[in-house]
Length: 286
Image (cartoon, rainbow, N blue to C red; front, side, top):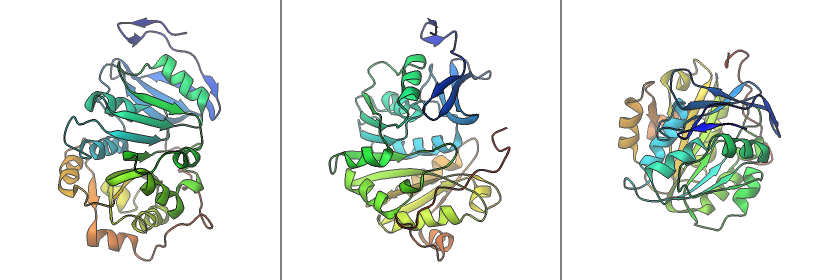
């Protein structure tokens, strides 16, 4: 059991067996009060207990931009997180939008228990976690009950196939209120067939879609994370562009005709033909 001093962890459990493998919490030597969750050696989440508004992972910061622009600053939101990890973005919403109601669907209940015990949530955070498959948990939610749905689910280092399809996207749209927004973490590398198909999938359901990613990833030069953003309403493209350009690792925003060219002839993914996201190349997490 960890000891705590002024809200900071002073000791950590060793490797812990959870449903999805072996979890480890590693201290961030460069940032006091910060911890990284690893699962079978793959980085899953980064948490700053001192400042939950700090987002270390680049793609998570881009999802943070989507949250920041989902409504006027400080307004409470109803947010659904499909995939929990160390609850990084749930913490972010709790401190940047106090009073927000948040529902997390995370299949790995022992992992959630470890995180909630060792990395406590901010005071007054309104976060409910359900242990369920992401699609099953989404299906149980009422129509038009969320302002934002975030999708960041991995089995190992791959997104499960059933969370990549038009049918799944349609259920996300059902849960969103009119004008609500969804952001998906899409992991892919050259030649970006999976990312192109996911953009086509979202465009089959939503009227407005954009991609946020580091330029080298978008050009197919390296494996990386693209954040796909979609809504039935116009997206805040100018705001996203400014924020992504100002990040420590600047990202581009692709929409409109540029997105048309990126998608090309890629077809939307259906339940009948879905495949998990590509396996990352060996050594990418070393």
